[in-house]
Length: 323
Image (cartoon, rainbow, N blue to C red):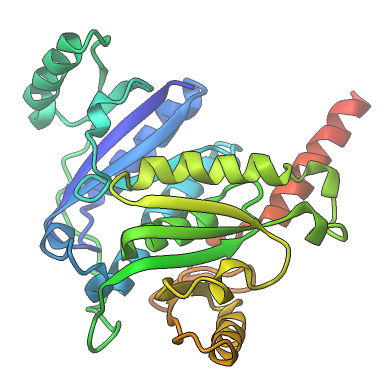
């Protein structure tokens, strides 16, 4: 599907200007009107300065991601499009120029960035791609939103070569994207993703609306390819709660949510029994199905879950059948 691109430049994570919030809202509305997807590409000086040790700004990045998705989701809900597809990528880490991707057809920019896009369009023409259609954004408010707090992450940030994460990853939503993105950013060389196999989902409500294991594996691969292309990915089905985390001694970190933190502790107990070193645990504390917050600020819109999405789809299907 063709996609609308919104490039944003920020100096520090959390220092969004009010007009940038407006830009996100305008881009979401345009993409919904055009019945297409949206990619928000973030260029950030702070990320560029820490690209070799993302662990040093772990909490700022996830809080910033949460803030972006909250703005997008609030706008989508107002337009009665809760399943609207939006991806956030970091231009300094993804390993490619989003502007030159063939699926990008439209770009949203303010007037001061027109010349930059015109130069990019020349590059696209040289690659025999159609030029981007330019949509001007309107807003002159440079006032900054209240900044997110400083880093409260690890006292001694670490560099991880191989990082693991697990989940069902059914109907990829903002919570999944934050989890997968943060794991990819943390990994220096490779990332392992355990995708819950169909055999472990037999009691899920509206199970018929859950994509097959192989489909979910492919969806995760496709998403991660857009997030970061400089590392290798192993996306594998798992038929127990541990997966490769207790059989692969080369994994050195595991990303968990608040809800799965105890599972991380169980993984380390199992690794200890097998003589493997413990995994460093990194927590995504922006989102859970019970509570969603960005540095203590309630973000109810981030509580969206795969179960909620399946219920929404089932209700829509039921209503359509009654018509």
